[in-house]
Length: 125
Image (cartoon, rainbow, N blue to C red):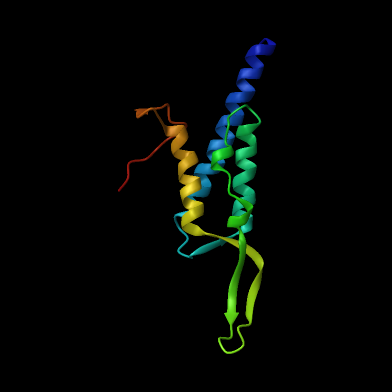
């Protein structure tokens, strides 16, 4: 195998790994019924995007803005106006799901035509 073929194989492998990580995260997110998810989800998401960016795919539009990951208000006192926030930062589940779904869809559809889908997609029941 020559250098060019090896480079193409490495790019294809990185593409499959990045897409697999994103697909798995979307599948897991669909099982969660909370209104927010903690920032570890965003770190894992960005790690998968970094893999794709590393092979030259422009994923900037899919990144989560740091301002979208904030502490949650866990208690408040309406008389004093005092609010208490969580130590961990969180993102709205629906906003995060929109970003995650968008990047997964990017790999499945382009210009309204089906694109080569990486992996097996079972029928929806």
